[in-house]
Structure formats: C-alpha cells, structure tokens
Length: 287
Image (cartoon, rainbow, N blue to C red; front, side, top):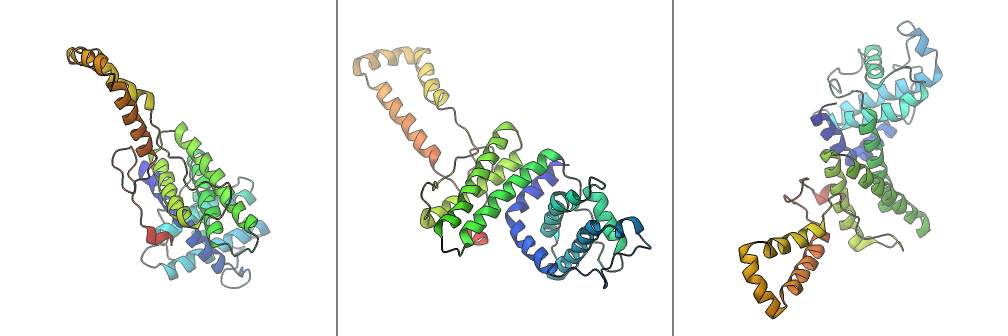
C-alpha cells in the first residue's frame, strides 16, 4: 500500500460514521430475489452459500446507494467499503477471498447495475498493520460519537462510551509511538483536538479526562540541560559563570523557562508547524 493511499484511508476514518449510516439505510432490506439476486449461472458455488450471498448483496446495494447519494464524490464512501469488506464481509468467508478479489466478483456479477467508476481503483487489500491502526482509530471515533449523541437517561451508560473511546485512543498512542507512521499519528492528533474542544464544555463524566495525551513526545531533560551545558563549556559561558556564581540567578531562570516549556507543551495548537505532524481541523465538520 502506497504512502498516499495509507494517508487517504486514515484521513477518512473520521467520516466513516456517515457512510456506515448510508450502508445501514441501503441494507434495511436485503433483496435476495429481485434485481440483486445472486445469479447461480454466473457464480454457482458462491450463490449457494447463504453467508456469501448476504454480504455480496449488501455490498451491491451500498454501491448503488453511494453513487445515488454522492454522485460526484464517492471516494470517502469507497474507503469505508474497503474497511467494511475486510473487517466484516471476509470474516464470514473463511479466508476464501481477499478484499480486492471479493470486490471484483461483486462488480462482475452486477456490471449491468453498478457504475464501474463508483469505486474502481479505490478498493485494495489493506496490509494487517495498517488495517489494525484503521480499526483502532475507527473504534475511537465510533465510541466518541456514541458518547456525544447518546440519549440514554443513565449517565453511566453514556460515559461508558467515553471510557471505551479513551481506551482505544491510548492504544492509538501506543501504536503511534511504536512506529514511524506519521500519517496515522497526524489523524490521532486531529482527534485529540476534536475531543478537547468537546470536553471543555460538555464533560459530564467523572474520571474522564478533559484532555488526552499528545502523539508528540518531548525530552525535557535535553531541552533544559543543553542550554546549561553550552553556557558552561564555552568561553562565553566561562565568563558568564563568574557572574552566575555571584548572582546565583541563572538556574532559577532556567528552571522557570523549563517550567514554561512544560506548560506550553501541554497546550493544544490547531495548526502547528513545529512538530512532525501538520494539523488541519474544521470544527464545523464534527458539530
């Protein structure tokens, strides 16, 4: 999977809930006998397998609805379908197909019904490492959206979603720190800001933090000590050292600066160009 593709699927995870809703609406009824009937003359083995038929038809019905709803931009919906096939559809098929092969079979069966340009070129086999990250990030968003939109009268049930979201987020942090996948870390950092904005005014859950840890790491020991070492082991530093001994002020100032750095590192910056990840976020998208 190319870096560009990896970036694109991560960046669409935040909108998966929109396409999941579309998928569910498209499949309120599974048409097993009408125009979506699995034609045994084309694929007799699979069309006689009930578990295959269900996911086969669901995929076709979703593709039709996706094209009807987003005729000019189906890319995000295709990324959700890519995830859904690999996460749910193939789990019922005993590893008989991979994601791309399954999609191609659907298109071959329904070439008369589904526009070939709906998702062609946007469905592929996601390697296990990337798929695991996508799945965990989706769990973060899925539980957070359930928390925000919950109408449950019992606050503990609502807060359980927040707890699950935070737990999955911490797993994302672990995955981020164990890899050099900046595209993934960038999307995790975006969620951190979305979460922060919401929780500042709407956190009603005891024990749930208002702010999540950043994907970025800072070595405060290096930040604080390096300026001191430079000062001590250069000619200028030697000269300054005499003044320092007289005034005993340098380390107090240095400690103060270190404290200021620690405080500033905790602030969340919407558009930071100082770290390895560039964050771009539109709050209206998640309201």
